[in-house]
Image (cartoon, rainbow, N blue to C red; front, side, top):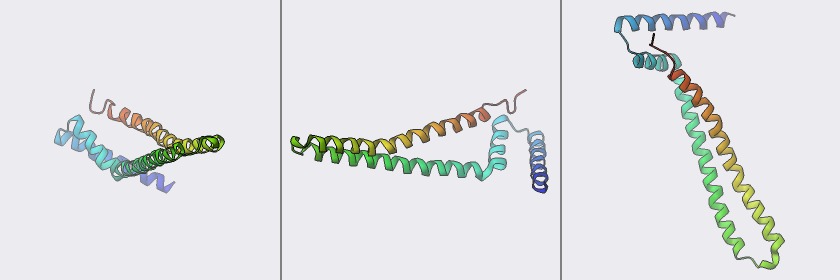
Length: 131
C-alpha cells in the first residue's frame, strides 16, 4: 500500500512537472512525447529494446548456424551409398528437424515482438498534444 502511494505520488509529480514545462516552454507534440518517453519510461524502454536486440542476434545466429550445418550434412548425405535409403531418410528428417526448430523459435519471437511494437505504436499514434 505504501509503495502504491509512493508510485502514485511520483507519477503525479512527473505529470505536474511535464504539464508546467508544456505551458512554460510551449512544447510541441514531439517534444512532449520525447519528454514522456525519456523521462517517464526512461531506461526501462531502452533496456527492453537492448534485450530484444540481443535476443534477435542470438536467434539469428542459431538459425543461420543450423541452416549452414544442414547444408553441410545434406552434402554428406548426397555422397552416401543409395543402398542405405532408410539411413538416408532418417538422417534427412533429423537434419530438417534441427534446422526447423531455431527457425520456428525465431519466427515465433518476431510474432510476439510485432504485438509489442503494435502496442507501442498505439501510444505513439495517440492524440498526445492534440485537441
